[in-house]
Length: 219
Image (cartoon, rainbow, N blue to C red; front, top):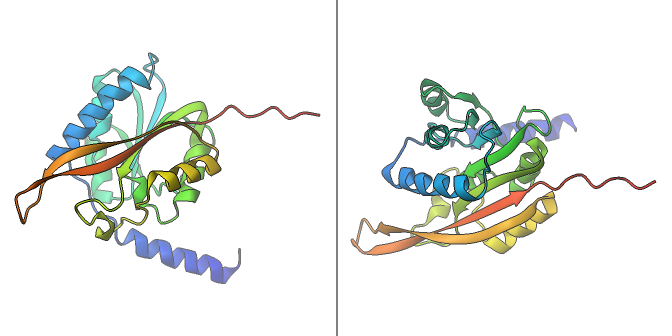
């Protein structure tokens, strides 16, 4: 890579990192995480409580708290917020300040990845999905959740929201990245408009993906 290209990338990352904000626990997200973890424990995580789980964009560690309550022991979180790293460490979890697109973990490190309301913060999601795949073990899975585009609230305008796209585009990128798509769905969260008081459904997208086993080479 040329020095000029590297400088541009570093400058761009400095700009996006300046737009990172803390994600304290909120009532809405705690309720959503409670529901999600129940479903993952029932349908996706399996019976082995010692699997290695990575919470990507872990906030202040609430999802890992719920996983620990369900018996899972090997939990690691990453986030770009220094404040959230400290809060997660205070809750007794492993946590590092790390970019989801440039993780320092070895290949095939984790059995299950949890990326909830994080992937939309990547300015280059194709690269990020490839990085997710790299650190996931073969036959491992990832749960991805994110807002759908063109919701009642203009979520596209939130700082650090770079990649709000529809399910067709996401599925295409996931397939190109090498993931096998097990589930693609949507759900609504009932909210109230602060200006009008009217209720509306905010639509979220969810995906469950699996990393295929390597295809044996034929000689």
